[in-house]
Image (cartoon, rainbow, N blue to C red; front, side):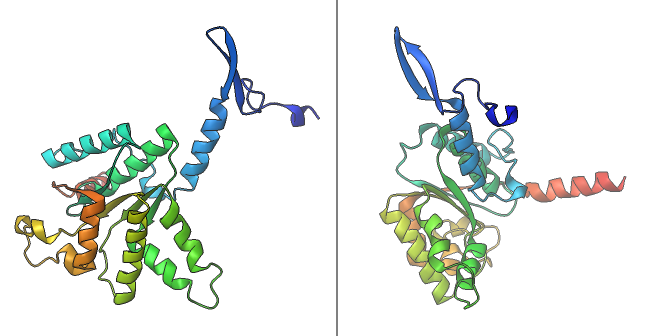
Length: 249
């Protein structure tokens, strides 16, 4: 009986409201315990993969000037949100920290401002939608699409990782246009460079982003996001090899 009556929060006695006195007047405000529970819940709903849950702005490696600039942009984005008029589109080669920085942004938005955010891998999202067309599927297309269309901030990772079919392009265009029209913030990462920056690529044989997802979609992304190119060495490869060497000693 004693265990059943024990209060979790001594400040609000589990009511969710804390009393305070402002200029001699007694008032109530949301208790911090309720805010903490809310943030914990939306963090769990953010679908951040285990590999990236430790990503934050402080631990982002920024050896290249473009990485330092990108980190500064990310910090400012979090600071002024929701007073932003566009999302962020990080482009660059593998291992320069695009996903780390993007995840750090949504985790900071959740933890400091309680903003509902969600992570989607580009290819995994499209595969999941396709699987709903199977007659044995336990979920519907709308159940998959609702969070990606309605969540306040969506992180779409690794855009263009696979060339798109007509169906994939149509579905991606639908998602992007829906969020654009509703003025919802989208953060995107891609290893592929848009054609207007193609002259800066070291490997002219690489596809442009337009070749991966189409010109119209790239044009829309330029409208709804600030495009930020990140350069640098493949940090993931360096860390991985260092870890392997230490393991084998």
